[in-house]
Image (cartoon, rainbow, N blue to C red):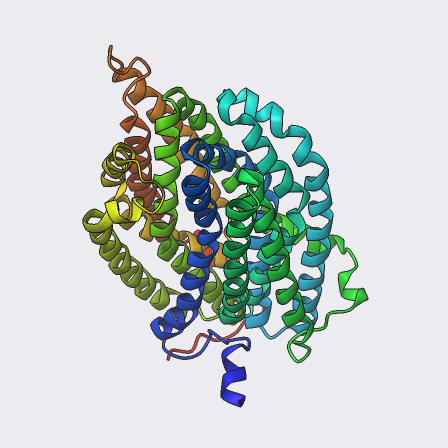
Length: 468
């Protein structure tokens, strides 16, 4: 029983063989990320099968707006993970406790803001994006329900981020698996049995995420040996709040920039018609699973780097970075091969329409090799963020999305216009994405090697570096 409890306890990543620590931490996160992706994937599969391809397009068209309005939580979550991991690595109980308390308070405030603002801007933004009349009501209903129940999503992501910063990636995984199973069951109940359509999958997701948030809160309340969680720690503190925002804002802006580019490109996507919108939804769902290992290694490198920077173990950071990249690239290469071999089978889960399956597979072939480049980008960005340098990945993202992705997408579409494709060839969107990934990997590698991230740690006290 004691060993079983150890699996769900905070994990010190400042000791032991780097690659083993990274793998043991990353595997639960990978499974968790896959489970997280199942939320949206279950929505897409169930509405596609039980309602139709237009409903599938509606869920996809709602996604860019959803992502844009959730970036506040992304910023708070990243900042929280960095501060928690560094103070945990430094064994500073007071600062760790105050950081966790501030995270909880800020999340509550931001949740209320989005619950008010989200429903008000939903339909105007959908209209601005030229969302087809045939799906705009479904999109609006989906988003409104999601925003009204945003607290569950927000608190799960923040509290799970805190658990990961403490080195406990297994608890967050278990809670997420429970809520994912519940989400799929509720999807089937609301859509297949009660015929609630697209709003039904939004309601199912909100309920399931609320339960996962409560489970994370229950876990944190019981971790009294590692930090203190009381009313004094929940009180807003200018110093900790500003540090959290300073670290988290660049990551939030990065996600905002990415979401804005998705919205801008979504307008181009909508111009290609409902068939391509549905195709884009399917490709992005498969893409979401293919990206999961990259995101998992990236987050693992953030926590690993944060704890070791806090403990003044830069030597372990450099060794762990090499190990992390080798593993991430190996996994990405394997997944790329599997997608090329079995992509049609995966796409077939979303639709029975043969033409749509073939169409989507052609687009997946364009993107496949890009996952290897993204493995490098995610690992190195994770290292920089874990060290406290969140601005460099932000600028890289800005260059990639604003300076490259959007102009390339529209430029290639313009250059490929013809009588058959008056708005350009749809492949333009995915070719532009592939080029952005490859160039982004090269830029990220350059800034990692420059090494400015080494000087960004929050913990300033001197400590000798000890080789393993």
